[in-house]
Length: 262
Image (cartoon, rainbow, N blue to C red; front, side, top):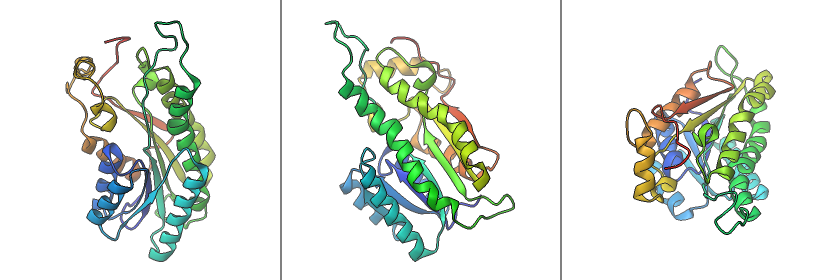
C-alpha cells in the first residue's frame, strides 16, 4: 500500500508518538489530519507541515467531537482528491492507582472511567466513525486495498505492573480487539494492526519520576533506554506499507518484560 497522496487521521497527533508518526507519514507524501485537544500545538504543527496537514480540535471521549473531525477530514479529502488511507488511534493516557489503597479504599470509578474512556472507548469510537468512509473508497493496488487501522496498546497489556489495573485493562482490550476487527474488515480490504510499545519518550513518560524511569530502563534487555518516537513511527510506516501485517499485535519493547514492582 502506498503512503503518498493518501490521507491519514491521527488522534493524539500533535505530540509524542502521534506527532512523530505524522511527520514520518508526511515525509512519505501523505496528507495528515491531526486530531488532538492541544489547539496551540495543532496550529504550530500545521503551519510547520504546510498544506498537506489539517488540525481538528478533538476530545476523543466526545462522540460528537469525533464526528465533527471525521466529517471535516472527509470534506478535506473531497477537496484534495486524496483518498483516506488509514487511521492511527494514538490518543492515550495513564493514571496509576492500586485497586485498593493503603487506607483500604478501592480505586475510584472516576479514575477507571477516565483511562478507559480515552484509551479504549476513544479508540473504538474513532475507528467506527472513520470506517464507513474507508469501505466506500476505491480500492488500489494488486490486493485491492482500502487502507489500514493502526491502534496503540502497551507492554502493560501483557505484563502490567502494580497500580496499572485500569491502564492494562484498556490496553489489553485494544490488543484483544485487533484480530476480530481485522476479520470484520477483511472483505473490504481494510487491515487492522496494533503496536504495543514499552517505555517510549513521550509526554506521559516524561511525567515519571527519575526512580520510576530508571527502574523501567533496568528491566529492558537491549537497548537499555526509552524508545525514540522516531523508532515507533518507523514501525507505523511499515505497518501501512506491508499488506501482510494484519490482525496482529507487534511488541516494540527492547525485550522488556516489566517486573511486578520497581
